[in-house]
Length: 197
Image (cartoon, rainbow, N blue to C red; front, side, top):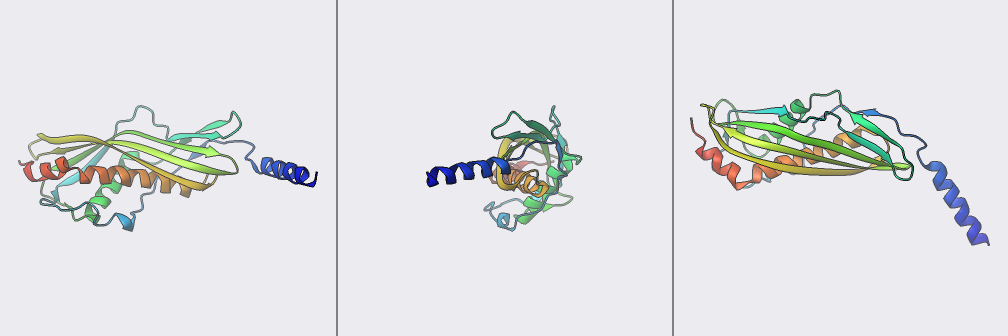
Protein backbone atom coordinates (compact mmCIF):
# COMPACT_ATOMS: atom_id res chain seq x y z
CA UNK A 1 0.00 0.00 0.00
CA UNK A 2 2.84 2.33 0.89
CA UNK A 3 4.43 1.63 -2.51
CA UNK A 4 1.19 2.52 -4.35
CA UNK A 5 0.86 5.75 -2.37
CA UNK A 6 4.45 6.73 -3.24
CA UNK A 7 3.85 6.01 -6.93
CA UNK A 8 0.63 8.04 -6.93
CA UNK A 9 2.40 10.95 -5.21
CA UNK A 10 5.20 10.81 -7.78
CA UNK A 11 2.69 10.80 -10.66
CA UNK A 12 0.87 13.83 -9.20
CA UNK A 13 4.18 15.64 -8.72
CA UNK A 14 5.26 14.95 -12.32
CA UNK A 15 1.87 16.14 -13.63
CA UNK A 16 2.16 19.31 -11.59
CA UNK A 17 5.54 20.02 -13.18
CA UNK A 18 4.21 19.76 -16.75
CA UNK A 19 3.93 23.04 -18.65
CA UNK A 20 0.22 24.08 -18.55
CA UNK A 21 0.26 26.17 -21.77
CA UNK A 22 2.42 26.91 -24.80
CA UNK A 23 2.93 30.44 -26.07
CA UNK A 24 4.30 31.60 -29.44
CA UNK A 25 8.02 32.30 -29.36
CA UNK A 26 10.32 34.62 -31.33
CA UNK A 27 13.93 33.44 -31.62
CA UNK A 28 16.69 35.78 -32.82
CA UNK A 29 19.28 33.91 -34.89
CA UNK A 30 22.86 34.21 -33.66
CA UNK A 31 25.61 32.19 -35.31
CA UNK A 32 28.50 31.08 -33.10
CA UNK A 33 31.30 29.02 -34.61
CA UNK A 34 32.10 25.63 -33.12
CA UNK A 35 35.86 25.01 -32.63
CA UNK A 36 35.24 21.29 -33.35
CA UNK A 37 34.60 22.19 -37.00
CA UNK A 38 38.11 23.51 -37.58
CA UNK A 39 40.15 21.59 -40.19
CA UNK A 40 37.65 18.76 -40.67
CA UNK A 41 36.91 19.22 -44.39
CA UNK A 42 40.01 17.38 -45.57
CA UNK A 43 42.50 17.95 -48.37
CA UNK A 44 42.01 21.01 -50.55
CA UNK A 45 43.62 21.60 -53.95
CA UNK A 46 41.85 24.92 -54.58
CA UNK A 47 40.63 27.16 -51.79
CA UNK A 48 39.64 30.50 -53.37
CA UNK A 49 36.04 31.69 -53.27
CA UNK A 50 35.34 35.29 -54.25
CA UNK A 51 32.28 35.61 -52.00
CA UNK A 52 29.50 33.72 -50.25
CA UNK A 53 26.00 34.98 -50.98
CA UNK A 54 22.88 33.46 -49.40
CA UNK A 55 19.20 33.92 -50.24
CA UNK A 56 16.05 32.76 -48.45
CA UNK A 57 13.92 30.72 -50.90
CA UNK A 58 11.43 29.43 -48.30
CA UNK A 59 7.72 29.95 -48.96
CA UNK A 60 6.83 29.51 -45.28
CA UNK A 61 8.85 31.97 -43.18
CA UNK A 62 7.69 30.43 -39.88
CA UNK A 63 10.67 28.96 -38.07
CA UNK A 64 8.89 26.03 -36.45
CA UNK A 65 6.35 24.77 -33.96
CA UNK A 66 6.17 24.08 -30.23
CA UNK A 67 3.95 21.16 -29.21
CA UNK A 68 2.97 19.64 -25.87
CA UNK A 69 3.82 15.98 -25.33
CA UNK A 70 0.46 15.03 -23.85
CA UNK A 71 -1.99 17.89 -24.50
CA UNK A 72 -3.38 19.30 -27.76
CA UNK A 73 -1.36 22.50 -27.37
CA UNK A 74 0.88 24.09 -29.96
CA UNK A 75 2.31 27.47 -30.93
CA UNK A 76 4.41 28.91 -33.74
CA UNK A 77 8.08 29.81 -33.51
CA UNK A 78 9.23 32.79 -35.58
CA UNK A 79 12.39 34.84 -35.95
CA UNK A 80 12.91 38.59 -36.36
CA UNK A 81 16.32 37.86 -37.92
CA UNK A 82 17.44 37.73 -41.54
CA UNK A 83 17.73 33.98 -42.19
CA UNK A 84 19.88 34.48 -45.31
CA UNK A 85 22.37 36.65 -43.39
CA UNK A 86 22.59 34.03 -40.62
CA UNK A 87 23.24 31.26 -43.16
CA UNK A 88 25.79 33.37 -45.05
CA UNK A 89 27.67 34.09 -41.83
CA UNK A 90 27.65 30.41 -40.83
CA UNK A 91 28.81 29.12 -44.23
CA UNK A 92 31.57 31.70 -44.57
CA UNK A 93 32.81 31.12 -41.02
CA UNK A 94 32.94 27.34 -41.44
CA UNK A 95 34.76 27.65 -44.77
CA UNK A 96 37.44 29.96 -43.36
CA UNK A 97 37.82 27.62 -40.35
CA UNK A 98 38.77 24.95 -42.89
CA UNK A 99 41.33 26.83 -44.96
CA UNK A 100 39.12 28.32 -47.66
CA UNK A 101 39.97 31.87 -48.69
CA UNK A 102 36.94 34.12 -49.14
CA UNK A 103 38.41 37.10 -50.99
CA UNK A 104 38.35 38.76 -54.41
CA UNK A 105 39.38 35.73 -56.48
CA UNK A 106 37.73 32.43 -57.39
CA UNK A 107 34.12 31.52 -58.12
CA UNK A 108 31.14 32.84 -56.18
CA UNK A 109 29.32 30.46 -53.81
CA UNK A 110 25.57 31.02 -53.92
CA UNK A 111 23.54 29.40 -51.14
CA UNK A 112 19.76 29.01 -51.27
CA UNK A 113 17.90 28.29 -48.03
CA UNK A 114 15.29 25.83 -49.29
CA UNK A 115 13.78 24.89 -45.93
CA UNK A 116 14.34 25.52 -42.23
CA UNK A 117 12.19 23.97 -39.52
CA UNK A 118 12.43 23.63 -35.75
CA UNK A 119 10.47 21.43 -33.37
CA UNK A 120 10.12 21.71 -29.61
CA UNK A 121 8.41 18.91 -27.71
CA UNK A 122 7.37 20.41 -24.37
CA UNK A 123 6.79 18.73 -21.02
CA UNK A 124 8.55 20.18 -17.98
CA UNK A 125 11.73 20.37 -20.05
CA UNK A 126 11.85 20.23 -23.83
CA UNK A 127 13.55 18.30 -26.57
CA UNK A 128 14.57 20.48 -29.52
CA UNK A 129 15.19 19.62 -33.15
CA UNK A 130 16.13 21.56 -36.28
CA UNK A 131 16.45 20.60 -39.94
CA UNK A 132 17.81 22.81 -42.72
CA UNK A 133 18.04 22.20 -46.48
CA UNK A 134 20.45 24.24 -48.57
CA UNK A 135 21.34 24.29 -52.26
CA UNK A 136 24.87 25.43 -53.06
CA UNK A 137 25.96 26.70 -56.48
CA UNK A 138 29.39 27.73 -57.68
CA UNK A 139 29.27 30.46 -60.29
CA UNK A 140 32.19 31.73 -62.39
CA UNK A 141 32.93 35.44 -62.79
CA UNK A 142 31.14 35.31 -66.17
CA UNK A 143 27.99 33.95 -64.48
CA UNK A 144 28.30 30.32 -65.59
CA UNK A 145 27.07 27.77 -63.01
CA UNK A 146 29.88 25.23 -62.61
CA UNK A 147 28.35 23.07 -59.89
CA UNK A 148 25.12 22.73 -57.91
CA UNK A 149 23.99 20.35 -55.18
CA UNK A 150 21.57 20.22 -52.25
CA UNK A 151 22.46 19.20 -48.70
CA UNK A 152 20.61 18.76 -45.41
CA UNK A 153 21.68 19.19 -41.81
CA UNK A 154 20.02 18.40 -38.49
CA UNK A 155 20.57 19.40 -34.89
CA UNK A 156 19.13 18.45 -31.51
CA UNK A 157 19.14 19.64 -27.93
CA UNK A 158 17.41 19.20 -24.56
CA UNK A 159 16.75 21.67 -21.78
CA UNK A 160 14.38 24.25 -20.34
CA UNK A 161 11.23 24.91 -22.35
CA UNK A 162 11.08 27.97 -24.57
CA UNK A 163 14.79 28.65 -24.08
CA UNK A 164 16.23 30.89 -26.83
CA UNK A 165 19.79 29.64 -26.28
CA UNK A 166 18.65 26.02 -26.76
CA UNK A 167 17.03 27.05 -30.04
CA UNK A 168 20.13 28.92 -31.20
CA UNK A 169 22.45 26.01 -30.38
CA UNK A 170 20.15 23.55 -32.16
CA UNK A 171 19.86 25.75 -35.26
CA UNK A 172 23.62 26.38 -35.40
CA UNK A 173 24.28 22.65 -35.13
CA UNK A 174 21.93 21.97 -38.07
CA UNK A 175 23.55 24.74 -40.15
CA UNK A 176 27.06 23.48 -39.40
CA UNK A 177 26.06 19.92 -40.35
CA UNK A 178 24.72 21.10 -43.72
CA UNK A 179 27.74 23.34 -44.37
CA UNK A 180 30.15 20.50 -43.60
CA UNK A 181 28.34 18.16 -45.97
CA UNK A 182 28.55 20.76 -48.72
CA UNK A 183 32.24 21.56 -48.16
CA UNK A 184 33.20 17.87 -48.03
CA UNK A 185 31.50 16.96 -51.31
CA UNK A 186 34.10 15.88 -53.90
CA UNK A 187 32.09 17.68 -56.60
CA UNK A 188 32.35 20.96 -54.69
CA UNK A 189 36.09 20.67 -54.19
CA UNK A 190 36.62 19.63 -57.82
CA UNK A 191 34.47 22.47 -59.18
CA UNK A 192 36.44 25.03 -57.17
CA UNK A 193 39.48 24.18 -59.28
CA UNK A 194 37.61 24.04 -62.59
CA UNK A 195 35.19 26.96 -62.25
CA UNK A 196 37.05 29.53 -64.36
CA UNK A 197 36.16 32.89 -65.78
